[in-house]
Image 1: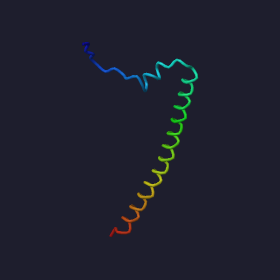
Image 2: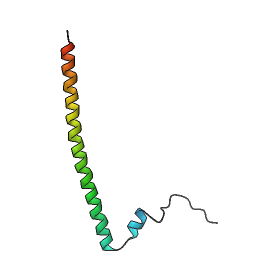
Image 3: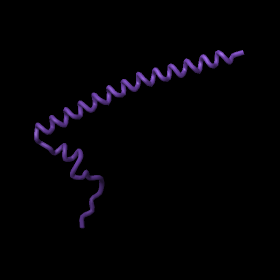
Image 4: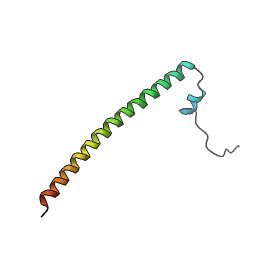
Length: 71
């Protein structure tokens, strides 16, 4: 019985992708990865702009409420 020490990747996921030698499949995977990255960046940008606006609005409301209560 042979004992193996350390981590060894299974036959799937990244290992299968790295062993794949067909050019068309690699190009397709690359295009999909680029499209996913672009979608994520666009979503994060939209979320950041909306989040910033929301925090600014909340900050203004708190500031105005504190001014109204000031003696």
